[in-house]
Each structure stands twice: as C-alpha cells, then as structure tokens.
Image 1 (cartoon, helix red, strand yellow):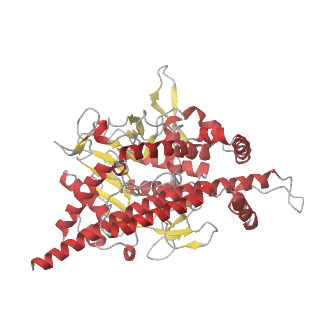
Image 2 (tube, rainbow, N blue to C red):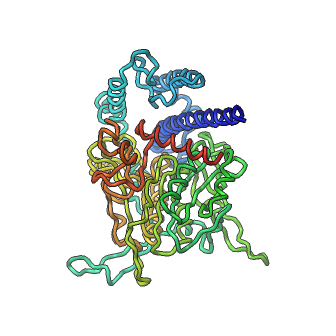
Image 3 (cartoon, helix red, strand yellow):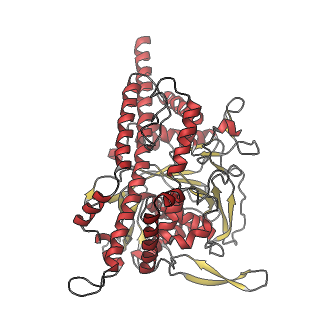
Length: 567
C-alpha cells in the first residue's frame, strides 16, 4: 500500500510539473500570437491604403467603402509578395527560440532545470534563452541583459531612429487611413438625457451620456438568450466575472480555493470550454462548487484566410458569438429564434466585455462586481469586505474602480503594446497626449453593478466605433475611456476612481520587473507569505503574480497542495 500511495503521489507531481510547463508554453504562444496579430494588421492596413489611393478600379469606378471591402482588400498574390518582402530575422529568431526551449523540455522531462526562468522573445544569438542553458551563468547578470534587450525591442522611438524612411511612410499611411475611415471621430451614436441633479460648479445642467446597449445591434425586439450551462445567478450577492477557457484544474483551484478560504460567498461566474473539451477533473470540481456559474460559449472562429477554424486558439483567432441574442418567435412555446452575431468576428478578449455585460444584468444595482483575469490573479483576502455599500434604493448611479500599473516603471508611451493598441484604434495623433500617462489595466476592474453595466456598454461601443481587431485593443479602449473622460457624466457612473499600483484592492504587479517583488519590499515571504501594498497591508488581490519567479513558484506550490487535498 505504501508503494502504491508513493506511485500515486509521484504521478500527481509529474502531472503537475507537466501542466505547469504546458501553461508556460501556452503563455509564450499567446505572446507570439499577439505579435503575429500586430504584423498581420499592419500588412492588411497597408494594402487597404494602397487600394484606397487608386483613383478607380478597372471599370473606372471609385473604390468601395471600407465597411464592405476591408475584410477582403488584401488579395492572396499581393499578400504573398508582401510577406516575402518582409525581413525574416525575427521569424527565424523565434524558430531558434522554439528550438532552444525544446532542449529545455527534454531536460525537464529528466527532472532537470525545473521552474527555469525563460525568455519569451528571441533576443539574439549571443544570449541564452533560459537560465541554465550555459554552464556557470550568473542569473542576475543574465536577467539584467534580458531586461535591457526587452526594453530596446519594445522602444518604438528607437525603431523610428533606426528606420526613419519606414517610420515616415508608416505615419503617412496612418494619416491617410484615419482620414479614409473617419477614425478622427470614434464615437457611437448615443442617447442623451439631462439630469437636473447633475450640475457643474457654475450650476449649469450637464449632459448625461447613456451608452448604447450591445443588444440594439441585434434588432429592435432582440433579447439576451444566453443561459448558464450549470449554476445559477443570485441577484442579491457580489460577483466575480472571468474568462477561463482551456485551463487545467490547477488554474480553477488557484482562483476558487483562496476565495473560499477568505470567506467570499458570492457568485464566481466563468466562461469555460465546451463540456467535452474540459480538462480532467474540471467539470466535476466546478459543479461541486455551490457558488460557481459556468457558461460554455458557442464560438465560430476563423483562420487568417477566412476559413472556419476549430477553437479560439487561446483567444488569438477572430471569432463570432452564437446563441447570444434572439428574437421572440411565433411558436406556441414562445422560444426566441437565434440571431446571428450582429458584430463582425473579433478577438475573444474583446468579446468578453459583451459577455460580462449580459452577466451583469442578473445582479442588483448596488451589489459589487469584479472583472478579473483568471489565470494570473491570486486572492489573498475577500476583495469586497471593505467596499462602500449604498443602502438607498433611490440612488441610480454607483462607483467604478480602475487600477493602474506602476507609473515609475512604465507608461503608455514606454509600452510598445499599449501605444500600438491605442494608436491602432484611435490614430496616433489622437493619442499622442496620452503617451506620458500611466497604464490603466483592463484586466482588473470592479464597481457597483449599475456602474459596471454602463462601463461594459461603453467598452462594447468602442469596438463598434473603432473596429480595432488587434488582440489587446480592449486595453486601448479601457485607457481611452478613462483619459478622454468619456465615462464622466455617463448614466449609472457616479465617479470613476483610479487607484495607483499598490494602493487599492487589486495590486497589478506586471510592470515591476526590474527587480524581484521581495527587493521592491512588497512580497513578505518570511512572516506573512503574502503580497503587500506599499503601505505594508496585504493586497486583497495579487494580479499578474506570474511575472515574479519566487511568487510564481509559491503559487505553484499552493496549487499542488490544493490538488493533493482533492486526491
């Protein structure tokens, strides 16, 4: 029996190590997919502009409007020629990186270099791709060089200095594209109403913006028909919303078990993979949780050439949502007929806000809702314990909480990703005044239901207005809504509160990479074994914990403990 139990324990440990490594590889794939998205978007826009600049087609007619033809503006022969013209050094480099990481896979299957730190970009032939690849490596010196090369890679201004002709042409094309598509006015048609209680300091009545409901594009009589696969919403409780598709059991354990330990009893609402595709043990575990509400979304996804694909490819593919809306039918049972997704295919990361909006309708106006990334968030305390509670039923607006990244370590202008997401959606000239602003994280938001519902309308509206399809444009929408003050004086939102990094309920850790969290003084492993805010109190939610090696290892250790308890 002892030998039998020992073998089971060894098998669980081996499985856990493999799942952890699989997750790290998937993270690399997501990062690479993001870069490929950006390259593809740039090429597609370039050729659309080339076509737009022609005076007419072979029949002498003017080029059709973008709404009808943008999706097929890039002919296959032109695309092939364009791709052959592109420098391939970064593609070849990514292949070298993959080959190097395959070596690490072989070593780890032998029990060597487990939890080794890796790079997720090819940084050159003269630098190891993971710690331990070369004997006698100095980890501190290696990490310092890695960070320097990452910084140089993501520096758009450095790229412009090295390639001035390409940069000038890109700016010229961007200006033409913005003029062609009307992106200088990225606003939705909105309903306006005047609230006599909403007055500025001069006593003048201000306009109150009511953002268009996502439902309206589906038709005048359309209704939301999406229902949970299992679980039931409780309107009177707080709730946490998250996308959680494609994960192994350890990810769900790392979200749910700490929340239970912290005393959270509200709803945990998740979008998960289709039941047959759920990984081992996930369905059984989730169904056993009384407060889990699970949705399985019917995605219709497409490859880059427009062919129907299987799966979302970790959110990298363009997908449409089916069975979200319906029109009441004439049948005796009154069951609504499905409406085809009224929006064009878009990244799942963008679609999630429409899902969250539908979910938010199940809760009372002044219950609190948190929108969080599930994979890299770790709950240390009940996040709703100390939020202000509105007791009056006559109040028709609420608080909305945003959470920033560390402003000393990054800004919109310093981050090539954030700069590109905003520029792609709104045009570079329209966001140039935002480049010195702190990044506001779209993966961590909370507020009273009445405010969250209005914010989610606005997020869906930004896609409708900009049609930005880069994976990550939702972060651009989020920052633009905040810094443009578009959310101010909007129906349902009394105040938008932005918490600096390390000063609120959710502590965004991703930008703190220049040294370890322990060196920053916000990871107390010795006495409390917890992530701290700057005032040394425990952060209720540690977001982006996986960016710090020591903290990632600690969370992985806890995942194993949760799994042992299940066994």
